[in-house]
Length: 562
Image (cartoon, rainbow, N blue to C red; front, side, top):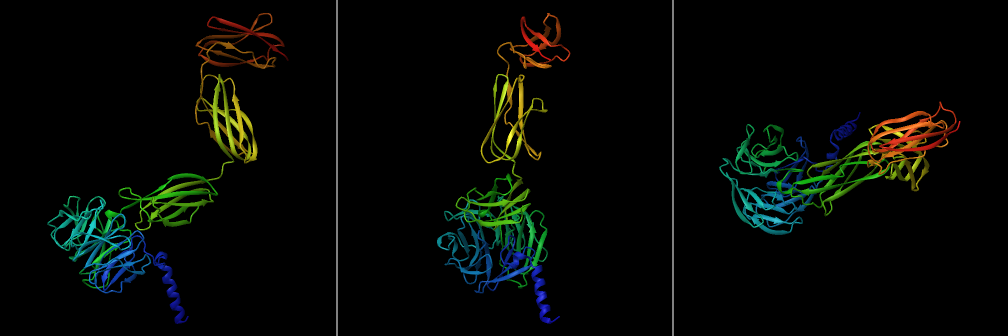
């Protein structure tokens, strides 16, 4: 194999090992950007692997940095008094704003106005396009903005942290004193706590400014740069004298990741993380609907809404949708509208469950929604209602579409056990509205549930439940009906209704007046009743049935024909 071929294979293998997203050279959530002097910034993966060295082309000390909602990187340069901007691919876009004098730190508010902290001419506020708005604070080294969008926390490389109102440009006094070091870069957490690189160590302060935890690593005594990780549970910091960079667990103080920039001492004076968590620009995301059921080969849409910590909708925030599950892979990315919303739609072609992930591109915060894809039902039921007349229950239902519909079994339940009481033929396949009805006659007093069992020609079936219970009440008067059928052979039914509780005796007599059978004799509650009379052992002829109830009696004639 030639030397040239070996080189080509080596390059191909290196590309295969290098993550796809970095082969595409685009900032990823969790990537770390380290200001290393000489106008340069190292772009590294979360594990410390160097992706690229970005160059402002201006030389001098690069210092504090920040990343906006479009994943653009803003880099302050203390030596040449500029702010440079790189797009999300690491391409230099030029300078942002003007009028700086030794800028060292930069933060955004929730409207992505820009606040640049200058050592010599105060905190200068710019709009998103770089237009100067006002000087809102004093000379400063590092600063951060709280969630109220007005209160700034400021360091001066001393043992105190000041507070200043950027909205009124007035001092708010000291937040913390007696820190015992040189306070440099700081970050406000969402819970009001503050982390600060303090030279000899790193301090964690509560919302009242009291020290609650101290972090340090052996051999490091010049902690300067600091920023929060997108996971909200760790932070990054660097020692400018050793050029060592660390990711540290907030709760335990354990080192998670570490690397050296290789640029020597007195070079690392700034650090930021893509997806950095800042108190002033916390973005939340919610996806709706959360749970859905859809038929395959139809479109399903979800809407993601992005808001800040004050529930204000955020416009122009990048959101990435990814579908995992039976219809994966599907993805989409776009920016939110003026309502803070973006919609994602796709068609599911496979039966099963999908999970839809919606992620804020700049921070990695995400929410999930779920959709269950099912086969279309053979019948689309558009309505199913009931009505009661005396002790007859009438069921009415309509379909808007039918596929291979053989018919409907009608089922009734009064105690949890379902019983088939009838059947109505279907209409095969049709996309026209079809109306159906069924009357359940002579139903005893009580409370009932009804359902339809829709049956395909192939035997498959689906249940549709009536949404309400059906109550058959008590009759308002005593009566007994003519038996049916009449004449009969060999069985017939005798219906009667009782307005009150009482003793009932129902007897059958032959034409000579001889009692041949007692059908009922005893106490019955008020309600509707139907008694079956089987005359298998009797000969043809005229018979009489007599009912006796609470002192009332009535006799009716019936004919048995064999």
